[in-house]
Length: 376
Image 1: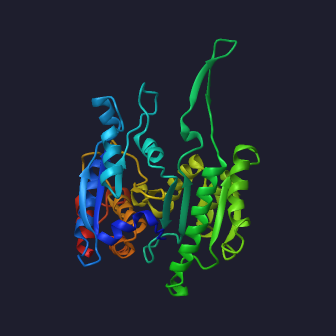
Image 2: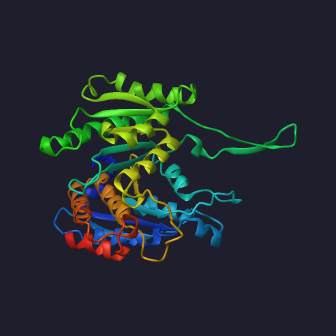
């Protein structure tokens, strides 16, 4: 998985003390976040390894039901003042309108300016999966997720619902820069792998996802701005190919030929849908991690939801959360420790003996976590 080192994390990497906020939130988040913590605490110790301290923080729909707030101000204050990064579990956002409630993870992204959601989707060599090594960059602050909706009544007395969609040049450019920079970084990492073992064989490539043939203004601005990142920095990104896909065509091709994609960059809603769909290519949402990335803070977050139907039963797959902990370390500059986590997880998956029910096994959340820790 590609690394993105940010100047804002330098002090943590230099001092080795790393304070991580743990936000289990709802449902299986309360099982998979402790699993990720256990793996972090099991990393081999060395002079360069981080020394972890953890702070438990509240958020979520269940917290809202008890206290009337989904993202307490104390959580934000302690994240900003005491933590270098965080892990977020899952949230049980209701499908119907609840007065006073809004998603805490969406609010967290806005308050901490976590403008890109980085979602690697890769198969494990030797596991029998369809071979792919794709990185999805999802713009994280705009699109329909600004949650500006309203209901009006038409002349016939029938309700009509509207939702505003925001696409700005500023946010689009930041997402595009992230995508092209990550493409360069992934190419550097691949250069250290024998050509015969690389899942991606060509030049690095960024695919821009849009629907500007219909949404010519909003998606048109997105398309033009992201294309401009390469076109206005031709020398810097000369080694990166660029192409485009309409979002419906992207979904079709992703399932038919996922090996055709390297780095994919999309507006918020499209990126959410594409990345969840891509999880099916590697077996389960329980395998796919993500990192909400800003210039000075990172929140690791498994892609899956709160899964209330299996919460508290030790059936949840902890691997997405464990890999998200690896992504968190990677973006903070601890790439060696992150690589150890990835290798341990891949070893467990390749062996195929210890699997949670979503992968066709009977192992528990704790058994999978212990297996990863043992490999560390």
